Image (cartoon, rainbow, N blue to C red; front, top):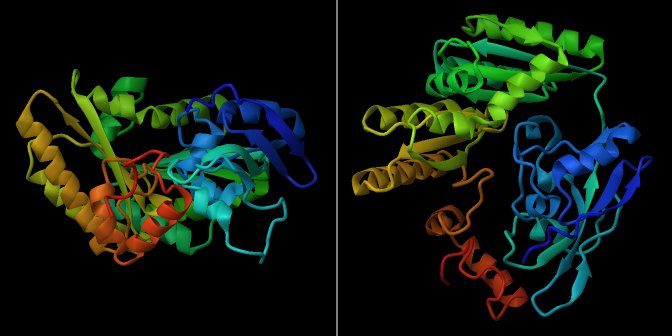
Amino acid sequence: LDLSRMNRVLRVDVDDADCTVQAGVRRKQLNAELAPTGLFFPVDPGADATLGGMAATRASGTSSVRYGTMRDNVIALQVVLADGRLIETGSRARKSASGYDLTRLFVGSEGTLGVITEVTLRLYPVPAYVVAAVAPFGSLAEAVGVVVKVRRAGIPIGRIELLDALMIRGINAYAGLTHPEAPTLFMEFSGTREEVEGQLRQVEALVRAGGGRDFTWASDAGERAALWHARHNAHYAAKGLRPGARSKGTDVCVPLSRLAECLARVQADMAGTFLMAPLVGHVGDGNFHLQYLIDPERPEEVAESERLHEQLVRHALELGGTCSGEHGVGLGKTRFMAAEHGEALHVLHTIKQALDPAGLLNPGKMLPPA
């Protein structure tokens, strides 16, 4: 189903800081229309995705460490069920103790339970002052250690992203930057000037005490845009490391306290393989991505990427995590659902059967055969 022509912003309420949009409205379109109000919608998966698609896939991204994911920012939905009924999953009230939480049921359902046609969203004031900062480290473990301390200190950081040395090499070549080829944290701080300057001092002290080799920051809008443009184009930067290769991306998410251990396991796996796989992560959430660069015409490379992917998911599940923090399940990760969900998988099948008994909606997606 193509909902791209359902692209109207239906309502914006400045006092309640919320809005209702049709499913085909795109993220950048919404923020452009919101600009005169002083409000914005913060969930930023990198791509200029539709809000309906973002709700259906429970999207998140670089800003979710501060503002949360789509799960936290969708207030209510309008959904068409498989039998044609049109339902509202909730009201505009910011809290409710009435009935099952149908909104959360459909957010992240990947189109398998119903077709989302309208989305009611939380909005936030545009920050008065924004600063971006960069800090390289001697190791991934040092960088993650600082992330844990920043989060434990309760510093309301806007974004905190980790790129490994290989990804930094790709970013430098792609965007014409000159960052040291080392594990690096990309950060953003927002608020009043006084708040941001206080956060910068706190984080700089943690970075330098935690092994950071440097801490540089910029408030200039152009410099900040260049930094985040490079981060958002990491997929293309990674592909540039091996021209002609296909990028086979995946992600997992673990509790932040187990992230350093998970990354150490991944490093050990990659040290024993012939494949290249740059890493980037929304590490404030314990979420990271790998991009296996493969030649799809070489069966040995395809098989090796599958082996490494299986190991990656196994590491995440053993450490109390999930097979996907934000990429979703689709077809490629259905085989991990039983290991992750156990007996709860039966409940998921029961819900699917109740709402879509004929299997009309995205058949074969998300759930393995019952």
